[in-house]
Length: 112
Image 1: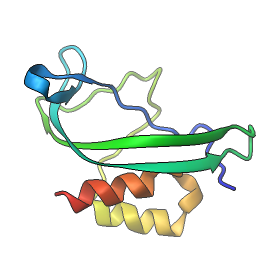
Image 2: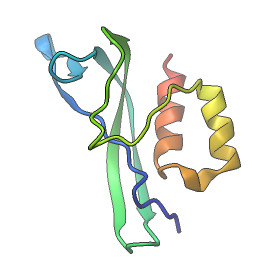
Image 3: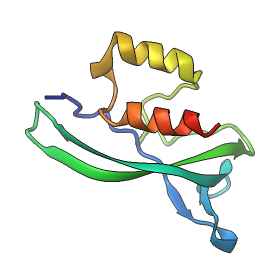
Image 4: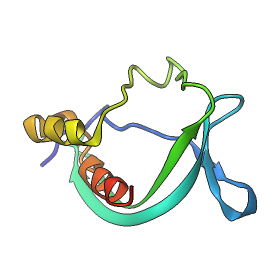
């Protein structure tokens, strides 16, 4: 069982122009997104007993515009990580991360 309460990052995406997806909101940074794969996962939160069983789509993009300024009501902290460093951190402390992050990282870095 995996404990992952309050460890679920969120992104905001929407339909882009000419059939391309984009991420961003308002006058902040944007990114043109490219689908790179899908995966299914199932995880039980041992704190709440809730079960996530989802089919997720992974999209990658290059940040355009200014540096993100997250809403402090929605984001406690964020950091830019080299994928190899992130893999090392996930190996050292797997319960510090959402249960689906390894699959996202695998698909996102496979298509760089």
